[in-house]
Amino acid sequence: MADLPLRKTRLAEPETPGLILTRRQRMGDQLYGQILEQIVSGRLPEGTRLPAEVDLCKMFGVSRPVVRQALQRLRADGLVHARQGSGTYVMARPAERLASFAQPQQVAEYLRSIEVRLVLEGSAARHAAERRSQTELTAIEAAHERFRLEAERGLMTPDADMAFHRAIAEASGNSFYASLLEHLHEAVTGFMNVSLHLTRTSPRERASQVLREHALILEAIKLQDPDSAQVTMQFHITQARRRMVDRSRDE
Image (cartoon, rainbow, N blue to C red):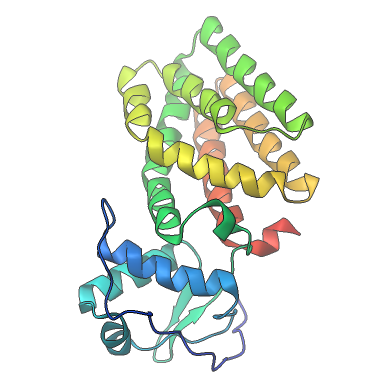
């Protein structure tokens, strides 16, 4: 990837010193959210170099491990990139309307759930391709059709999206997959809600891409191809994360 030009935009300091820990939010998530908010708003455009770790500690009144945790998450989500000997730079900017659908700290939590979903749902799809019954395949097909019809009307909902993913987990032949997915229900449906809001307010091609990804997963399970089922599910989840954090995917 070509280096982006260095920008001198400053990271705005918090209005009050330090971060105030709220219920169920980790300090790293809150710092992540503060930086994300400035990226989304455009105050930190692509190519901006972030302050050094020690300076972030002073600005936000947090420890170095908290700063490193936040930066690690931002890197994992493709928002920033560390250049050896140079610093950490903003690499992608979410659509500004993301801030209308979720608080930055919520986005941090939702994106963390993606790491678990990649393992959990990738494996569930693999086993579903190996073990699914005709009845279970029919349930997956019905969930996909419901989601498709909603997409045609521009009404894609988290319930319909979750029904597709749940049907695959239930077809895995191992009840723990469905149970674990249900345990993640709040984070998964929260992510889906934000993602689908972005999709509904994007060019139609974005919704078509989501449907194509679902169709590929379904086809792999139908053909009982476990390798393809796992890869297509993990690709779909990874693409969903990228669509949330990179506004260029709205184009």
